Image: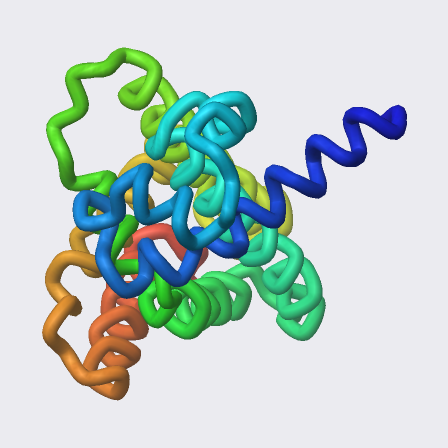
Length: 199
């Protein structure tokens, strides 16, 4: 990365960091480009140069959130011996670091919209596919280690992601304790169907 690219990336990061509290406080729709200009001291042209639009800025913040989540999970994953334990740990990590994230309400609002723009639809689809691939890798690992019955990891990864999306919706108004119980029970039911039965 040359000096100009480095400066551009630093500017991008600064704008994003100064905008994050706006999305947390006002939500996605409630945050205007004018709000972003006022909070960052950047011109509209500078914001559009770095992000194209408000949606691009929000997706940049979401990518940063996702990167941080992955880094934290890589550290946490090492403490689990079996794949089944990893799956329980994964949902606890999900609850602690995603469902309680400051941007969660703005993210729900953003991803809940009916996007007409094909670039946004494509970006959302890429995010879902990435999560499904993560699930598939975890499930395939369990099969390779003989913990889970041989099956179609691709299909199971989609089913597991659908389960997580449904749990996220159903737990919106639950307490943290009830959310943990709901997710843990759901993982137990899911694992019951795929685990190799031991005598």
